[in-house]
Image 1 (cartoon, rainbow, N blue to C red):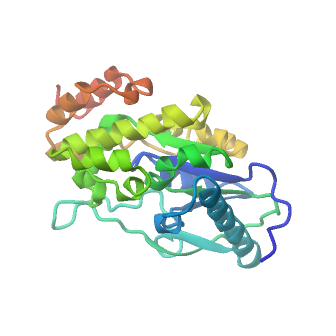
Image 2: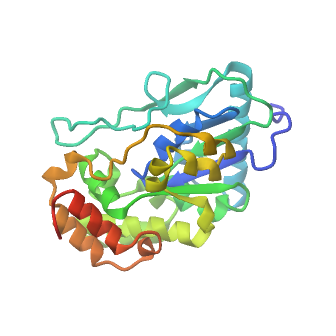
Length: 290
């Protein structure tokens, strides 16, 4: 396969973020822009396991970008997780299932993109856990961005969604980070493991990303998507009607005060991105004073 003709420097973009921070919403908004395509977790972490770092990993990721560019150019389609051939703004059900958790609604498949694309179009590939673990490698070759969110909102979402993080595990990151895996293995408490994962994620962004490449979910909402201009300048014109789900009523069945209390008692890089007052304010919004 010949390389895609003349992609602009920096046109292949890595997007990551903490699971449930709004990365899928970011993809949906970016896909509203001209000459831009954002794919939701199209790469399985298995594609990168066992490769040399950084060369092997970065070469495999670059080859994936190239293959998707060809597919989008030739057929207007690409691999992505989605629902009925589209990328939703939220991959999880709005209401819990019989087990009390919200199930994922997306499946890997082919997504169609019916818009013209120049050879240098911006292609964004997103994966939260895997790319967060590999940031030290990926930043050596690709522009990388991350979405973050109020840490209490993330913890509350983890309690209500059916995924590995609900039990305090992150296999797609642990396979690339032995220290994280061992720390989670050693922690018997589920919330304790979740707090470890949260701190580890924020630490990766503090360590490997410049401040301007980290986008807060709250800023993305407040600007109608305009904050994503750091990824794609055209996003500065977005005025999407967005609202924050940080105080989702579904969290009413949780012991918010206890979860917030455990979070506020931690130290770590999460407090470089959010103040403890931001957590307390969300507790107040949810009507569960800590």
